[in-house]
Length: 134
Image 1 (cartoon, rainbow, N blue to C red):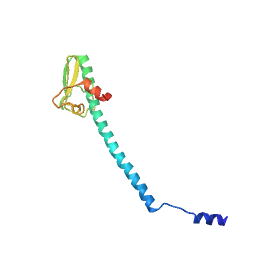
Image 2: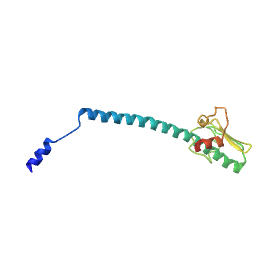
Image 3: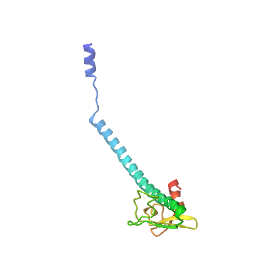
Image 4: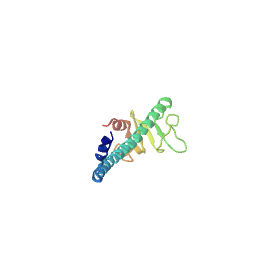
């Protein structure tokens, strides 16, 4: 038994410094790729949250329209008009209009996500297309 233990002790193998460095370099490369990918995922998630918020505001306007018949809603810090229907909205400046059967939002941060300029009205259809990935 003692001979067997001595034989195993002499046969002890380990990693060389070069092998250890290669493993560390490979892990570093994988980590660098993962950080870039995760950054892109976080950006897309923030954009989808902005568009989803705009859709939530439009849905609140639809509820408001069905109860009081209004066709335009404005968010101001002093008196938010849709607080009964919409809560926890981050963007505090926007205007929703209902014209010709189409709900659209203006001055909301989602306009840049769907490829519109700041002065454009963004129709609900453009927002839902973005959310569907079209």
